[in-house]
Amino acid sequence: MKPHKLPPLTKITALLTALVLFFGGTTSAAANDKSGWSNQALIYILAPTLDGTSGIGPFDTEVDMDAADVFDALDGAFLGAYRGEGERFGIQLDIVSMDLKMDGEGDRGALAGEVKVEQTTVITTASWRLNKEFRLLGGALFNDLSTGVSLTGPSGTRQQSAGDDWVDPIVGVAYETPLGAHWDFSGSALVGGFGVGSESVVVLTGSFAYRFNHWSSLTLGYRYLDFDYEDGEGADRFKFNMKQYGPAVGVRFDF
Image (cartoon, rainbow, N blue to C red; front, side):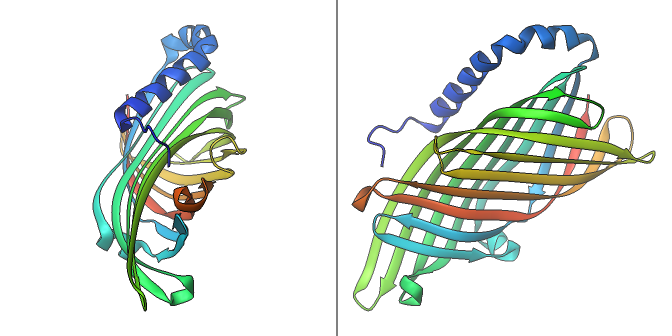
């Protein structure tokens, strides 16, 4: 695809640097909020269903995996999030990194084989609180994806691999409200892409949290991501049209 891909660490560093510069104008607001600044760290497990199409060159592979299939295919993963907020201004960072090996099929079942996917998704946003319940969000989604496809059919085995990375601008809204003494609910909706990186991307989340004490909570939620990305032509074509959705369970720390 791209002739000169940067190492993942370099790409993530460049993205974060750009975001710091982009949100530089809000540093005075953050400074004013510093006395009331709060932090949250979340470590969670996601049980996603994958449904969509992965394409490399002229070959498309249909992917349909439930959570059990994903865990069977899982080679490694890291999922975590951070949120910091003052009186009005806040920042959020969410990282999902997963390595998968899965079965797939192409050409309407005429070809069968294996798909290997290594994906890292970083979502970083700044927020501005409108009131106790609602916050406006704006930022970027970085996706680094490497896919390998091996398909076997009547004419033999075909193998091809490719990778790509892109950055999508995203905007959205977040909502939160307490539900009694120990429970609270939070959710967010983000849309982006707009043809800058992907054609479109949608991220929807919702979760309930049960607070054990002032610093720890158990979270139970649901997460939905929808990518519509395609780049290149012919042998250089790369397609990732995928829905990833499912329940999530995590532990949240407040400090």
